[in-house]
Amino acid sequence: MSSNYWSKIDYKLLDEKIAYRGKRIVVEELHYKNPRTGDIIYREHVLAGHAAIIMPILDNGNLIMIKEPRTPIGLNVLAFPAGMIEDGETPEQGAIRELEEETGYRAGFIKKLREVYPAIGYSNEKTIIYLAKDLVKTERHLDKTEDIEVVEIPIDEAKRMLESGEIRTSSETVALLHYFMYEK
Image 1 (cartoon, rainbow, N blue to C red):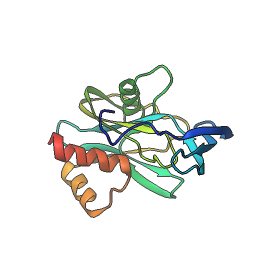
Image 2 (image 1 turned 180 degrees about the horizontal axis):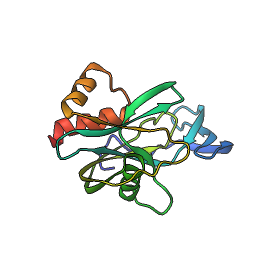
Image 3 (image 1 turned 90 degrees about the horizontal axis):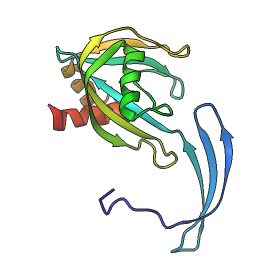
C-alpha cells in the first residue's frame, strides 16, 4: 500500500470475541476506542478469507460465464467462475482450480488483473481477479452443493449487459471495466 489513501487505523482495540463460527465464515464482535474523540466504537466483522475470480476468454473472443443460484439475494446470477482460495494454495492456483472445477476449462495463460475488497464495511474478504486465455476443454468437477450452468457470452453482449445494468455483481463489474479500460 504505497498510497496516502491507505494507512493503518490508529483505533485502540479494547476487546474482541467470536460471535459465530461457521463452515465458511467467522463473525467477530469488537470494541475500539477512537483516539481523536475518545468514543467507543462497536464493530462486527465477517472473516471470510480470500477468493479468486476468473474471467475466461475463448479464442473466438467469447466469455465463459456461469449461471448459479445465489440464495442471499434469491436470484440465479450470471457470474465468472470463482471460489475461495484453499489453505496451502496461491491465489493463482485457486483461480486455475476453480476455473476447471466449475467450467471444465483449463487455462494455458492466466494474468492477475487486480485485487478488490468487495465489502470493507464489515468483511475482510479480498477477491483477486484474473484473466484466463488459451483455454482447453477438460472436465468439470463440481462440489455436491454446486448447481452451475456454463454459459458462453459474446464479449460485446457482456459489454451491453454491463452498460444496461444487467451485470451488477461487484467482481464481474470490476473485471469487465478493467478489461475494457486496460486490456482490450
